[in-house]
Amino acid sequence: MANQPLKGTARLVAAWHNSRAGFRDIWTHEEAFRMEFLVWLVSVPVAFLISGTVFQAAILISAGIFLLIVEILNSALEAVVDRIGVERHELSRMAKDLGSLAVLFATGLLAILWVAAFWQWVMG
Image (cartoon, rainbow, N blue to C red):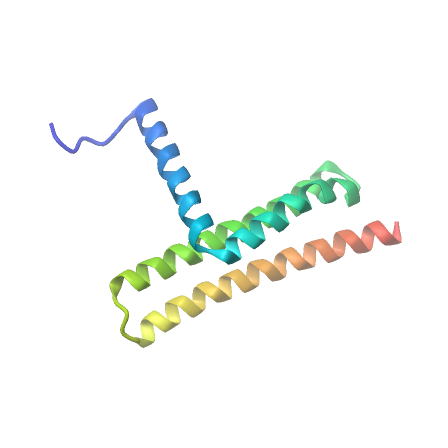
């Protein structure tokens, strides 16, 4: 039968290819993601350096991943809104602004955790 959903390993392989394409797309088209990803890469070893425990380092690293996830979802939302049409519409503006707000909150969470970690590291 046509259009049968993939199952098992074939489904995992297809999902992997889709994810690679998504990473390529966001890397190519979203400067904010590129900057956040590069900062995250640098922050991973720093997290282990300043953390008192592996768990604390994992929290700092995970907060960075969370920001990247929110940025990806915000970019996906913007792509869908742009696909619908280029005319100005209040709901389109609201959707984009709410996505931006989610990125701001994720950045705030990340900042709070890193400031706390640095504070603990400096104060010993």
